Image (tube, rainbow, N blue to C red; front, side):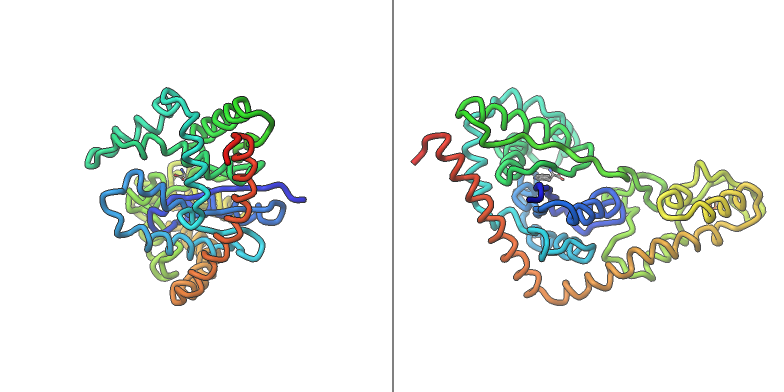
Length: 328
Ligand code: TRP
Ligand code: SF4
């Protein structure tokens, strides 16, 4: 039997190349060797966005379309939506009973996000309990591995602590503690050279047309010292070259690096090589995504079927949890 993998993402809008390389592609590969569960964490979006919920459903559909287009395969994996599997809420409630407040107050993201987000009141029960809900999301599937970014490691650590506390209090090994799995490409530069991020408006989106992404790369920031074609440049300080490190072959990379340092090639020659690679990756995803977006029925069917499968798996853990806790 294959070991289980579980991961989730908050639906905060359309996904970009950074999400694809940093997380999603890894999720796609894991499908070959693991029994994978992937879900859209729409309840988690409410922990900060509770006052205006108008975009949650649409963002959830967009993320789902991005996932399927990128190669998450509902035939092989269980792809679902958190709010459609009510067992998450039940386990969240039970785990909240055994989670000391001090553990939650000490999670670094708790203070950080409160400092970051000033326009909303995050002094809520739900926001403090974010990691308990996440723990329930994870432990309810008893996965061996949870592929996440480094930012999620504190949440995974508290998940493991909660699992151990549960097992200690109620006996046995009902909730095995899972391990994190870090992705290969944690940092992808955006078109302005900063880390690719929705909040910087510097992204190549999976939902952008090939023409738009072509244009974005053509106008992407380069080594500022290469203002003219005749100026030499330094690939080490150029975000275009950072993308070459991800996408291009050794030969292409040395062609670009040498041409840059000697002004033998122009930035557009260098970018053209990159554009070919980026579009070869993104164009098929874009095309497939368009089909899902044009067919909301199909998206819904996939979400319903996946959530039913997830629910069945979650129900098994809940029986074991209730019985360990001697609940009726
Ligand atoms: N907190 C995660 C994020 O912001 C989303 C998430 C919710 C998650 N539940 C999870 C990730 C369970 C992994 C496992 O990206
Ligand atoms: Fe950057 Fe390439 Fe231009 Fe050099 S040639 S500055 S690496 S885009």
